[in-house]
Length: 376
Ligand code: FEO
Image (cartoon, rainbow, N blue to C red; front, top):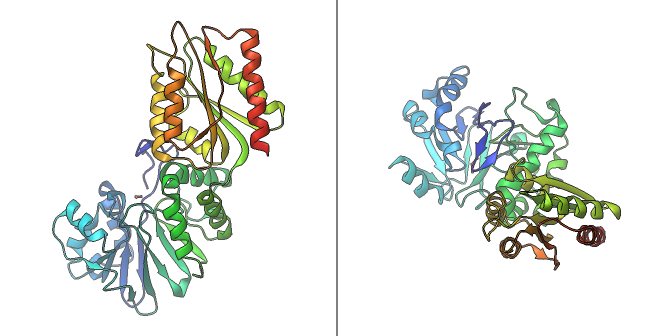
């Protein structure tokens, strides 16, 4: 349980997170995944509550990223007879992180019979890293999904029907948007690889376990990998003297005037990862920047760099902003949006100093035009 973490790969984790390791006990016992290194003692204590760690027969590394493998070496020292299993692509990565160790690939050992329980392994490359895989227990119809279907939530509650639903879904959405969105094609392949597998429960390695209405999270993943969106425009901006802010508000008013939804975020007051969460299900992204020293405003530049890496699918968008005596920011924003894969809607919303009444009206009309586009 990591109640304190607030930054995960540059993504703000408002509710902390968990690193979930699972003990699977048949006649033999396997530990599936370990935990981030500072949490080793906690994991060890939990294992010792039910067994002697020295009796572990297998340790499964579904993923080599250190939030799931950081305690591998220490627990392997406690369980010297345990066989360590990972995907073939995980073997060199684990060795690079932790030095030479004996590892068995899943081609050699595609499943493990624990006596009463079976662990069956499926590689899911790039969901999240090339080495990623999932483990499935057919007797319990239980999928140990590692990063997929996770959420960054620290909670003493364990299951999805025990927690606040709005918080759970917000965090599941944020997690997909900020971690898996650029890998949607691979996640889609992983979801397809699991089609036909009977699943009653999904236990990810971050956050809450899905045991009730699991079709809801599977359906959400299907929508997200397909880039489905709502008639919503996210307007992300920053402002020096409130001129770009006036433009953002006018565009939002226009979007709303035709019955579409606008959500406006100031990039000084809102973390870029929270804006990305909003963008996942929005059809339009509009980015406003004042020109500062002939260039983009720094908070907007940071947001654009982040969005460019995450490549939101199936978005239309536009840039806008005010300038003093020379522009420059709008062109830069447009270039970066194009590189992020956003289909640009042309406009001339780049005004000097403070927007005049006529310029304000043009912003509102542009917003209305965007609103009509995203409704259709
Ligand atoms: Fe939760 Fe890709 O590690």
